Image (tube, rainbow, N blue to C red):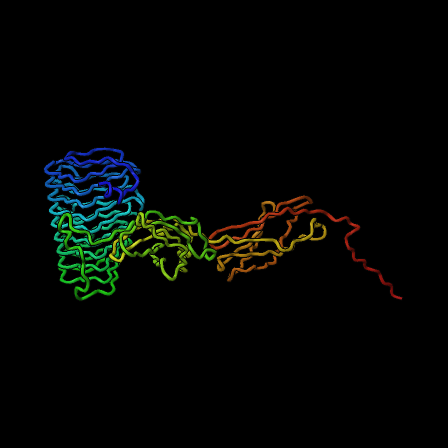
Length: 524
């Protein structure tokens, strides 16, 4: 089964587990495969790993396992976890949470948290069967049906972190019941639900708040596209609360028995009135149905730099490697919800090479920074790779977006020393530039720790030099000697640049001072 392991964790060694025995461990890599676990009545896989741990469970059946603790068949903390082609049948927890699995991977998008080509049916507990937290969450080609939850989350609980993406595609969720509230529960995540059947699920019609067939909570952003959402029963069909939003695109939504269609921020577009598209995954009711999806995996993404500046930088240059079973694929990027395709005509693509020996592509490309990106912050560039059969993979890279610091220079200055018995004003001409090309810049000075009284404000409308006359008054209590003079330029983002010079004061000898002589005139 090394080919299955290498599909997900290529290059790493592992322990092969093929016996019907319980696994409790705290480190290492495991491939649990081709095991029929039945009537063990115990938590079967309990894995407290570390960031380097990898757990793959493939071609396994969990049959009639009844446990008296939360997190029934599988419980993992940290590392990565992939469940591939598993069946969970009548998993129960005696009113504890998550009868099938509780997976909390390392908090990083690149750590896999996958449930793929699997069936979970007839689970029974306080909640629905699965809890997936953190990591790159993927639920794909999955059937979850006939689950009973005495309280809530009858289908799943997805727990992301802001900017972490969860994908849920080609899956069927059928006839799952929450006695109180919520079926598909999305918490603090960026969730994409594509080509799914959400059918005949139900939750209470008594609970008005925190209750929806599809539920977004605590800053979750959920996008639902090309789905059939039918015959569901509950108080709200869509529920978005606490800075959340749900977007529904090109879905077929007939015959739902709900009191309120939507509660919270919901947007819809291109809602279809007939079943105009065909989902290819109805056969996932079988444990080992043929996979119609050609997989794609992002192996590596690197950014040329991690800091980019407003207007000074137009592109983010990136390079990477992708393994793809399909004939073609698309890669696109997203910054905080702003999406732009980048393997296309709009992008300068310097390399796109196919490597036949390992079915991978390498590429180098420039992602154009959108004009709407203006605020300095730390952002995630999310990179999606997608085949035309809608299989996708996501990875992200963090970068810092900065505003430019204004520059200040001295163009003209007095001749030193300045003679105090001749003048108490130093006249300068300063040059100020700001690559932001907009905003206000305040010019000020400090002379030997004494600040100027009236700073000068200038409006910046372009990236050219702005020459500014600037007078510095010398306080009456300053005597001859050397003093430090510091000029500062501060923009509206509190970015400051400065320039320091030493100024010298002296007294001019009396005989060198121009004295006006008044002659006395006598009247004749």
